[in-house]
Image 1 (cartoon, one colour):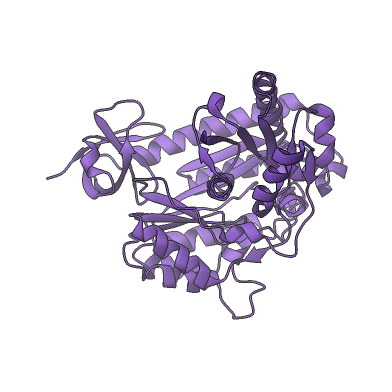
Image 2: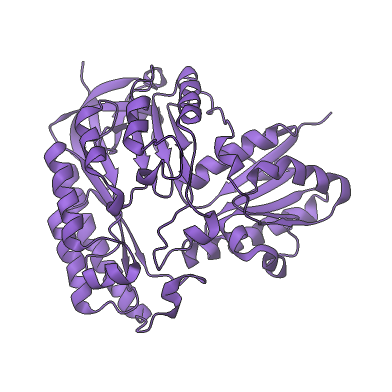
Length: 440
């Protein structure tokens, strides 16, 4: 019997990467082995993102490329899942009639059933209904051989309804996994040799809301910190309004918790933050930053910023620049406002011209490059603990790892150090990485 192959193309965030790992584990039960060669594939699954218009455009471009493989291989099953599938559903068949399967964010667990039906009948399937619970969150997905780091989903969905964001409509309301199930999964990963876990959720610091046992995110972090073999813990993404004093103290109390937080601010203007329905002010955000740095002076802070939100004046934009100058983020994901169907902001007046958005985005990115380089150069001459993850893609005689503050470091070394935590003297700082030497 010939081996059947699965190819997954993933768009978007770390949660989508984790979803793809679970998809691969699930479809493996149907006899499909994952491949990196799309021409070998018998099933192609595109795992999509729909947070911004550009992400959706990339999906359709990729679909066009895969279309030609369908004409070469008659039995090939082409499937599309994730947020774009959830958003568009059957309408996707108008743009891509050659799709065989469209499945939503709550239907990953049904993939073996869907694929089996298509293999037998050849019928197209579209399934985007929400379930009472997200059954795919707990699908076990062993890490790839030799993996040092792994993602673990602890919750899915969002209750915040920020006026620019489609997540609550495409991922559903917040649902947290039981702490016991999360702990068991992380123990399994530790047995495979994983040293670092990143906890995932649309809003991880609201973990536990809705659970009947009173669990919360700091409690979960404390339990994870006691798991043998797990040396480092990270999490993403956090909402500033839910960053509690108890969670901030965890940076002082828990050794495995790395000195890094991703804390999306989105805007520095109180007027825009209110229109965005973010639930905090410029001043309140800054107070949380100050508390974090008081407890953990070396903490690395990254964030998100949206420019050109409806009604954003030059003064509002200056407030964002002002906040950036005060915080001096280590890194920043910055975007032009992208109108998403179904969100409240679609109906807001005072749309910002594209040329103004572009100008503001360039200003934000120019300033952030300055701050990133400044923060990176401050590490030159220091010895940092680096967890070696893999051989560098750019130079086979180098190894690549990360500091606890989430900075990429390239070092001369060999594969024997993968999985080790080594002291590294930082010799040279660049915009996107550091260069260092192993210390004896």
